[in-house]
Image (tube, rainbow, N blue to C red; front, side, top):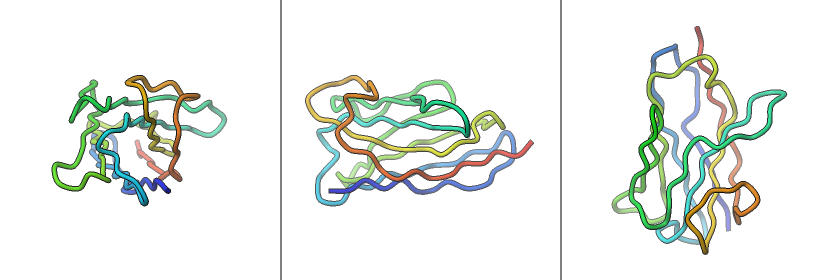
Length: 118
């Protein structure tokens, strides 16, 4: 049972990136997905929460969504990126609820680095 985030990289201010999160050993279709980030010296913070009841969660510049076909894949579309968005981004998953409290997450993936240059 494993989660893995990918798709990070270096992008200029105002650019976009799409992160992917793939599950191995289980399906994400009925799980609530959290996307998080952690910058050096800062605490991990939530950037998007996708309830198991929804196929998409739109929030400002970040949109989380599920793959229409692959039930073990979710995405985080990030637009109009700013230097303050620079961080390691993580995906997580939980069963049995719709919220994304950090302590309620059952599974965590290794992060992917996003760097936004000014």
